[in-house]
Amino acid sequence: MHIAHPPKVHKSFGVHELTFARLHDEIKHLISASLYKEEFTVTACEIMTSPIFSSSSSEQPNVQGFTLVEFLCTFALLTVVAMLAAPSFASLIQKLRVHQAVMELKGALQIARSEAVRRGENIKLRKKDSTEGRSCTASASDWSCGWDVFVDIDNNGIPGPPGTADDDELIQSFPGLLEASVRFTTNSSTLTVNRWGAINGIGASFAVTPKALNDSNLDTMICISSGGRVRSTLGNSCT
Image (cartoon, rainbow, N blue to C red; front, side, top):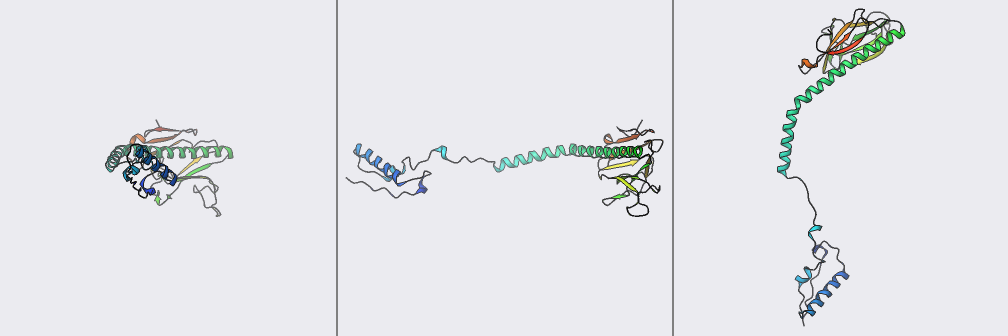
């Protein structure tokens, strides 16, 4: 009787953790099975096909992902969708900018009215001449660079710098919005609120329009009655 010695077994042959005890038991099992069948030769193939060297398909790693073709198709589809949606996004952004400018100007007017009534004296709003490298000096009606709410102590209509002879009390300063255009329809750089809350004594109005997009549907008017009531409406007229 001749029994072939099994080859040396390394861990790299299978995914199971092999121990000498398990290997020894498996070889004994194969030898016993061969003797029972009156077969006296245990080959290396029988040992290598043993369960301790084989791994089921369920133990194989489940690799998932995208192929290059799938990625390129998805990218092209997203690009087309973004190009179709770009005009709508631009219009939405301009609408939000116009709304923000309207709310800030209405807020400034309300602050001026409340302070004028509380203090019992005139409060003024004056446009800024420049902001962030942008100039608004070409026209007195251009309020796009922002405005200041202040107490005009020296009554010159201009907020004086702090610590000087023209030092006025600045109540609040509002920066301009680069994406919106604000125009005072009375072509004046200053607006006065008296101690009864009336604005300019006869009322006034502002036109707020988008600067980058020519869309008249976004034009908004801020209308101020002679009594000081402030409201906003879409369009180019307060009537």
